[in-house]
Structure formats: structure tokens, C-alpha cells
Length: 154
Image (tube, rainbow, N blue to C red; front, side, top):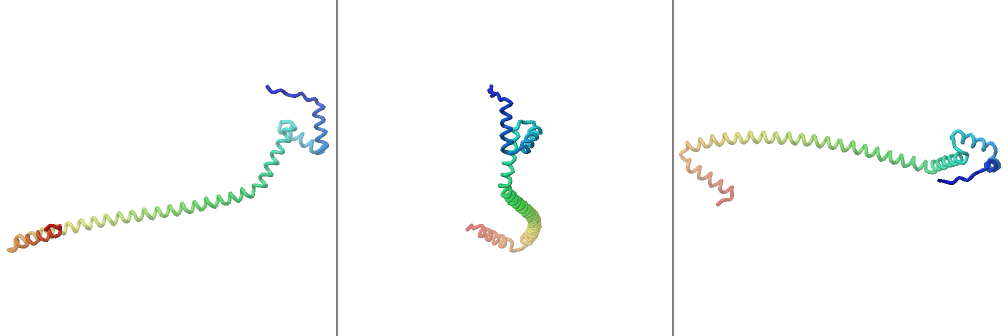
């Protein structure tokens, strides 16, 4: 348990007289009123005033710097927002390019399917012509030789 020193009313009167002598009766009255409003003793009211003064001094000292930092930070945030907008636009463009590429690939595959079907019809027609030709054996052996040459076979 904390031991408290006993103070006589005369001691607090002496402190009051010292404050009166240093700051004046009017300032003492303000301090008393402030202590009453805050519900604290005179010493704590004085400490609170000094803390407030210290905060104001810090604001005066660091306020312009903080404002400058806030402006800089705001500029960075705005720049990031512009970059994000640009990135979103680029992503949208890339999606459109991908969609267009998929459509072109589908068209190419459809065209290839049509060409393959046409080649099969042409092959069937030519096969029918060759089979009915008197030179069918010669045409067949020539085609087989060309196929082996394309495959790299001797």
C-alpha cells in the first residue's frame, strides 16, 4: 500500500501563495476553475494544460511536415489508382484479343474440316477414275513411290 504524506492546509496555502506570486491571482483563478471542471486537483489540471501545450507545440512543429507527407501520400494513392485503371484497361484488351483469337481458331478449324471433306471427295472421285483406267496399276505404283519418298523411305 502506498504511503501518503500528510499535508496541512497551510502547505497548500503556501503553494497557492507561490503560484499567486509567480502567475498572478487571475491565472490561479483560471487554474482553480479548470481543476473544478475536470474534477482533478490543481497539480493535475496544470499537468493537463502542459500536456495540451506540448501537443500544440508538436502540431506547430510537425504540422507542415505531416501535411506535406499527407499530400505526397495522396499523390501516390492517386497515381496507384491511375495505374490500376490502366491495368484494368489492358486486361480488358487482352480478353478481347483472346476472344478474337479463339474465334479465328474456330474459323480455321471449320475451314480445315471443309478442306478435308473436299479432299476426301476428290480422293474418292480420283480413286474411282483411276480404278476404271487402263493405267491403274502404273498410277498406283507411282503414287506409292511418291508416298515413300515423302516419308523418307527408300
